[in-house]
Length: 175
Length: 112
Length: 145
Image 1: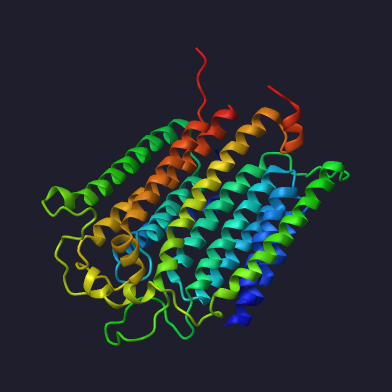
Image 2: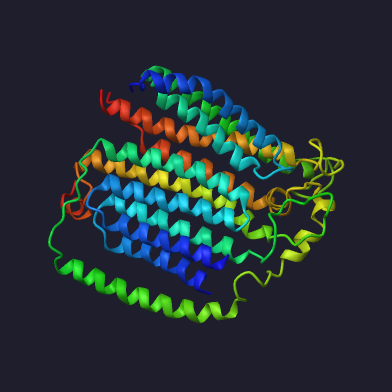
């Protein structure tokens, strides 16, 4: 299982690298869509069917919006010589990446190896869940009953995002 | 452990794209790649070897289940990611209509 | 905006109703099978987006749709809030309590208040994504006029 997921994440990295360096913007958008759809396969292999359903529909809607924005505009990325600001930002990126990799390597030594340990709160959530909530689907029971406050906050974030989009895209009529 | 490391390298690829690219659409795609890598990391933490999907079977209720708590946290985060990506695209449409370009250096040159 | 060719229109006429029914199925069986409020909500929004893309619409018709979808979104979030506060109102003094009696696990009418939460969160998510999409389409229509 670990080998299979590693291979698919390797493909995702190659797709992401192509999406960043593509000359044509439409190709970059479609390569970003490939990363999203490979994530669906990873979710199915990690035994999480709820996440797979949500991710595949959300990725399709995101692709529709991005392609609609890109198609009625100029599609070339103007490639210019990397000047001094480009070199400074690339050097800064390499420093940040090496630092973050070093600290990440240090911090995952405290985790158990892949697939063995369970987190501390898994036992209390799984054992009494069917009697306490009454639902057979454990993820729905956790989302709406044990952690209902987080779901209320998420619904509020969605309403606020819609409010933001409606405010940005409003055209005022001139009197 | 290599899976965790590869997932973090995907996050770093997205971060590299946000810092060094000049086109606004590529910055939006790289931000989306960073979000995907964090969802994958949460799903990787909760996995148990030989576990099944967390739907309790009433005939045999004592199997080992995959941890449901990280899946519950990621489930709402995916929909929020869609809403913020759509909001970023709305801002990009507005910028393109006013300045007729997607390049961030030319936008900061023209003021007003 | 213009619609698409006749093959896409005929296929959409056949499929859009089935996708809508599938979304409602995933919402209602949220406590028995994988899915729930969020998955069913985005599938419902996908059905409406498919119809708008295939048939196109005139501009005034889309404005009426946007008024309707914002109304449904606001009503759904207020009902979710009322369901959450209803534990306080009926004398039980706990926020978010699951006070409807739970039946036997494994049937449709079971798990207390969870099916009600699923339905209204599903309506809210579907209306939000539809409103975002309609706002983008209406903006594009007004620019090209």
